[in-house]
View (cartoon, rainbow, N blue to C red):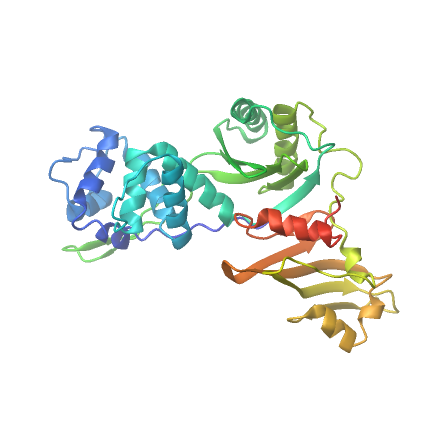
Length: 375
């Protein structure tokens, strides 16, 4: 599976946003309570940049990691997640709504770690998009998500220590409609590598800081028993699935019954009566299809079009689909609040790729209605 790429952190541009908002920077540095060797009473942006270049202290690595996490939320989506998380935590860090996202993110990190953590977890799950689907034995709910999450974390620490020689793991969770979402942070934290540019009089700090830990994602639908996992390696995916089933659903084999991974029926696209009905204010189309047909030399085709079904008809290929093998399909679903539309890529029997932080329930509802996702 393709994992999220690390972002380059331009600390110079990030910190320039705190000119006139030094009090936020001072409060943030104050979290380390003297472990940095900085005088917070007079700290300003130039002095903080200089500290990043030449400073020391046993808390510097932790500060850099937190600084990076705050920077990670400095996007349009990150801003939305910060505001939403603050509202849910009944916390108002920016009464007039005028703080730039950089200042808002660091302020929330300093003043309300619960709100920051919720925003950060949601943002990371939104960026994840390559999931493997499994069907559970039933539509069982998680009785106590908090206790289950703690047990899940302890179990993973035991597993990872055995085969990765590291028991550093953190499991966080949050509820989103019918879904209970888990973010698993694990492996050793990566030390920041800083790259400095500019002149001696005005050094520019351009650190490249890798994410603090590997991130894997689990999303479980309590109403359907469907599990979606994104993990870096197949072996870890299996460990996550079984540990989740044991700790959260009290049955290690909950997702390992015969047919549990047979969640997609791409052959349905070849049926004569295949159609893609959606709600009145939504629209859907098949944008890409990869398939083989049973013919001498085993030809394979890739069709990309704004309307693949119509293109297949015009080129006399649709009647060739039955009996062939559809390897991959890409649907495009348009929602009123999503100008670009949702691109859903399906392959094999249980591989799905789409940004699932919004309209995930709609996407799966449609795929089930169309007969693509096996109920």
